[in-house]
Image 1 (cartoon, helix red, strand yellow):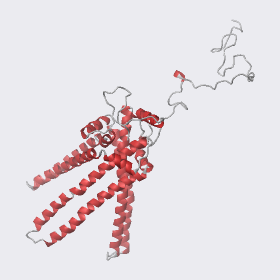
Image 2 (cartoon, rainbow, N blue to C red; image 1 turned 180 degrees about the vertical axis):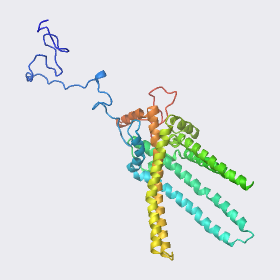
Image 3 (cartoon, rainbow, N blue to C red; image 1 turned 135 degrees about the vertical axis):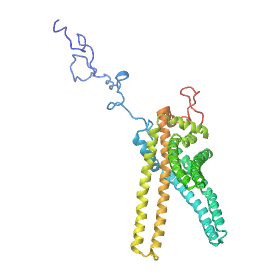
Image 4 (cartoon, helix red, strand yellow; image 1 turned 45 degrees about the vertical axis):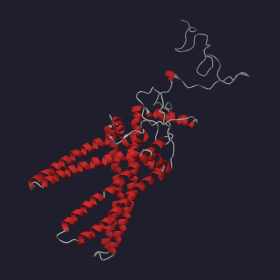
Length: 409
């Protein structure tokens, strides 16, 4: 083989007419200006097909869009942890305002029922004769228990409403929408009855478990002291077992409010749907719910307890005998502590309700590709085309790519 016949591996055939990557023929002199009238060369085009940059390579992956609160992709642990707090910060007037209204309604309803009844009951018990004292006391306790059903019912309704409000806030915020206080409440009102039914069902289950444990102890107390001791031990062990069972069922059904509001499902369908969505993700869901709950409770204690402790210490230092000044300090400390408790309770309720909605959206993105549906919804909406509700559950009989008929409103 002669030198003229030799060519470098991958080079052009002998004769040097093939262009290189810059468009210059092999063998042509470099940096030669183009002839007059020659059109400028086309800019280099990105490679496609098998040579396209792959996800994870530098400069080769573009993250999914984030039109609002959540990125449209399965969420990482950090996003799941802080998204509920970001919900509160993103739209504080509607979120914190709703939580504060719920807390105030609960406190005012309880005070309006308890305070007048206690004043009446104390006077009645003090004026009762010795023969009627036990009967009056038993009637007072029974009346108090029945009367407390009123604030409990109000609290259940308010709590259910707040859950619906936060589910809608997270869902609309993920699409880049920012709804006001009134808009959130009007939309939630459409699903209030299933939400109340779910909250009442949970409350009834808890009360039934407590009543069963108390009933065991009461029945045993009427038998003998030995049976009472054994029944208390049995009730404690049974209570621990019920707590574990309740925690497991509670996590499996934690998405029920989100399903009720966003998928317009009934109570039974929402229970089945929540159970299905948490399959395979139980411990992940449990861990996130537990961790956020611990963070909120620790933060609440850090804020409230020092103020209460400082008030107690000041009362002892300023008025060791408790003659008069200590009472004033105690009243002021109690009022400040109550106000802080209401504010922190509102924040806690909002964040916990938002966390459930975030977990619901994350699980649907992981198991049903909801992120793709949300991306499509955002693209159509931003281009001015009509859109449908992207959160409705996919129909098993619907063809692939079909859209639900309901509108997102």
